[in-house]
Image (cartoon, rainbow, N blue to C red; front, side, top):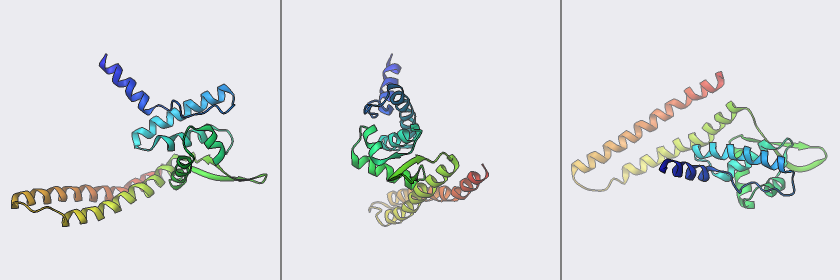
Length: 184
């Protein structure tokens, strides 16, 4: 019984319920879009990606035609600022590509479906930035070890050394992951 309550809570926390707006569109199109958005919101939750970013990708993915900023905004129950920020993030990691049409001067978006490129860009943009930031933080932490007994200082130094080891291993893994992605 308790497990069902937990599962229901997790499902509602990662659900896209209420994110997709009908906006006068056909019920079957809206239903399809809701299911696609729900799929991406669930996947994004695992990766720690905001719901709004997953919802934007979901509506663009579910659309047979490229969508403009305004069309994305009218299909989702999120703020204009969240749409703008989400589009920036999705373009940055290569999840969306901009397309143009001769008859339409607006910026239009469609999903980039090449998973290898998407993962590679995610690793490059996000993980590399995190690794670089981690290096700076570790240096700062070494200078900020609080005073105390020799034993306490030694214990904190050992913990920072462990963090440095994790950081080094993650950095060493990046070229291997890049090579693997190029092979697949």
